[in-house]
Amino acid sequence: MTASSTEADTGRRLKALEEAIYNLQRERRPADDTLDNVKTGTVAGFLSSSVPQGWLLLAGQTITAADFPALAAFLSSHGLSLTLPDYVDRVPIGAGNLYAVTATGGGADAVVVSHTHSGPSHTHPTGHHASAAEAAGFGLTASASFTDRVRVDGSGDVSGAGGTAATGATGGSGTGANLPPWRGLYWMIRT
Image (cartoon, rainbow, N blue to C red; front, side, top):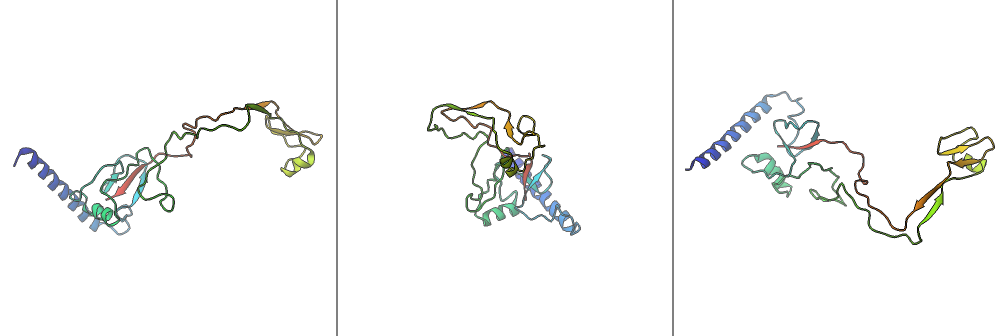
């Protein structure tokens, strides 16, 4: 046996011993210890990058059945590979009719499909006038006032801020503009 194979074997044995000790500790904890009652294969978001005992960060790494037997058995029983999904800088989405389990897609820099408008470049007036009856249809009254938006004056006429808005003949890029509100979490899986 070479020194490197002896080190690898010792590392595997040490990992197995740590796992056995951890499992014994889990068995002796009270039944209401919620972190330890989480089932193998559960995915959860954490606010810290410190990986708790019995969890793995979902970063696209491949596990082995020797190191994580329960997780490997769980993944295999569900037809999944031993390569964990990568959730670093990604958002999970519900699997079902549109998205398969472990499928990937999308991106932070979604691009609007190139297109042209049927007419030439032009402008639209942004000032709008309406009668008191039309304003009432929008729930506005003669005393309502919205700075730089829509104003209902004492005569009952609705008027906007005025000016024009240009419409080009071609569309633009949606880079970085297509993201829903988000909050970063560290996604981990129970081993």
